Image 1 (cartoon, one colour):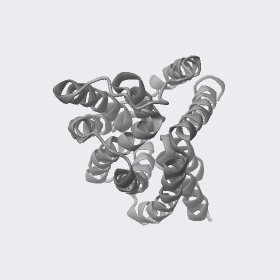
Image 2 (cartoon, helix red, strand yellow; image 1 turned 135 degrees about the vertical axis):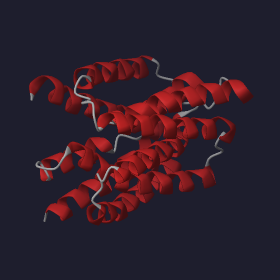
Image 3 (cartoon, helix red, strand yellow; image 1 turned 180 degrees about the vertical axis):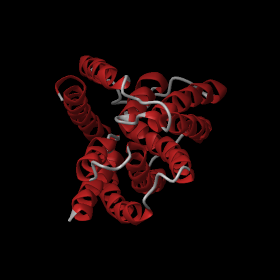
Length: 252
């Protein structure tokens, strides 16, 4: 029964992640609630073993329909892998608890900024070209890759926001781009967790199947309805993240 419950959570996580990120909001709490006696690093490893497949499939689906700016995204993905590996190594020895109270405040600022700028992310108008875009992309990948490996909640949503705000992408292109970077960071973190023995593969493989199913559905909806739909989902997911992380930080 436990596996059925977290498989359902993994399917929903894949759906949300494919559209705008934030799937960890669904699956990670489900893992902690269902397997409370398990080491946190192992639960994060199980999460990565499922989500890496969902984000990889979403990347492949988006790349067929959306013009990705590979010159910026490949450096971002490589930097994210490095950052995520370092972050995952760090979390095996240092607690990320200090981020719990800061995260909801950062998310409130992201939500307020997005709401205040009603046209943010509606038009695809990249701010940079060539090396400049690659450098900004790599900086985003490195910082958020470390965050993903070390703590993680909202990683995909932060990627979408920064691709929109700093690089000038619309929400659809930002979401598609975020999937590639998120796949790289998930892969690096998974490699570290597996090396440290923090992955239960019998759970991870079952959850991966469910995550991919949700990812395929979410990607189809995002491509069908475009940037406006992705922006609306972004606002919903960030609001949910604020509620969840705020409760965990200040009320639990």
